[in-house]
Length: 279
Image 1 (tube, rainbow, N blue to C red):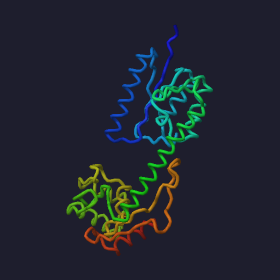
Image 2 (image 1 turned 135 degrees about the horizontal axis):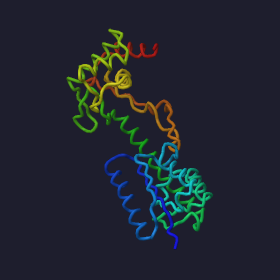
Image 3 (image 1 turned 90 degrees about the horizontal axis):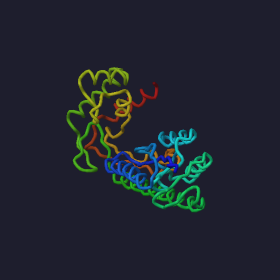
Image 4 (image 1 turned 90 degrees about the vertical axis):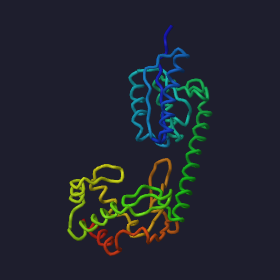
C-alpha cells in the first residue's frame, strides 16, 4: 500500500512568546496527526510573525509552492483556513495552484479537502477569515485614535523611562545624549553616520541595547516628542490587505502638549529638520 507523502503549513501572525508557543503547538499537532493517519510527513513549513492577509513576505509558503512543483508531496495539511490566508484571492490562488499540481489541501479542523470539498464552502470560510482581519484592523485603528486623543506614548523612546503604561519621565543620562545628538548635528555639522560612530566609540547603545546606526540617529533627530509634543496619527493603514499606508485627512491627527517631556528647544529641532531636508 502506498503511503501518502504529506507536508504541513503553520503560520502565526506575531512573534510574541504566546504566539510562538502556538506555532510549536501546531508543529507538534501535525507530527501526531500524520502518525495517526498513516501519512509520511516529509516537511513542515512555517512562517513566524507573518500576517495572513498577504502572500508576499511569507517565504515558507512560497517554498511550499515551489516544492509542490517538484512532486515532493501529494498532500498539504493546514490546521484551518485562516492559517493559509486571510485574503480570499490569495487563498483561492494558493489552493488552485496546488490542485493543478495534483496536490490535495486538507484543512484539518474543518475536515475539508480541496479535492473533495466544495470550493464555495472554502471560499465562504476564507471570506469569514478575511472579515475577521478587517474587523481587527478597524479595532486597532480605533485604539490608536483613542490613544492619540489622550496623548499616549506606548512605545519605547530613547531619552525617557516609562513610569506607567502611557507615561514617560526623562532619563537624565539618555536625555543628555539626545541633546548632544542635536548639538552635534546642528552646531558641529556632524553627519548622522559620524554621530553614530561617535556614540558607539563612547560605548553608548540604543534603548534596545544595540549599537547606534545612522538610521537610529535619524529617528531621534526627527522625533518631535523631544520638543514636548506628542503627535499621533501621522500615518494610517489605507488597506489592511496590502498594508499600504497613507497620511490621514485633517482631523485624524492629534497633537498633545507635554512640556514636562521637552528635551530640546523648538529652534534647535527646526534647524535639524531644515538641515535634514537640504541633505
